[in-house]
Length: 181
Image (cartoon, rainbow, N blue to C red; front, side, top):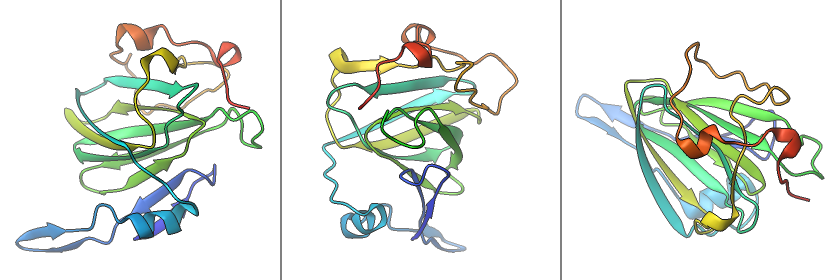
């Protein structure tokens, strides 16, 4: 696997080694030892999640202010633009974001450590999205940033208004958000 640090170096793009021929393909989608070597620390995943969304659905930008979740994300059908926003007040990249296209075709995975908000918008007709988390879902600690916050100025790759859940449409502006120390 190839490990590519992004503009926020703790957010890592993982490109698996894919073996393919006329029969199809094979790749190792997760290896604990190689993953920990790539991110430079021991990681314990406790929950796997799977979502399916239609074109233009935007999910996020979610985070948990306690029981913060690191996430290893990938797409197994379709294509999304995936975003991580640094909410660690002590970080030199506080308030910055990185985005990456993840697709069934490119098979990329993105590691988003604890202390980040996360979201994605679906670019294909349908997308199935898988992610591993380092802590359990805790609804009482869940928070949501406003997807189109002017301070963050995330450059979502779509010209149309995304489809949002009621919860996501009520996201908080970055300047009013609870953040991590």
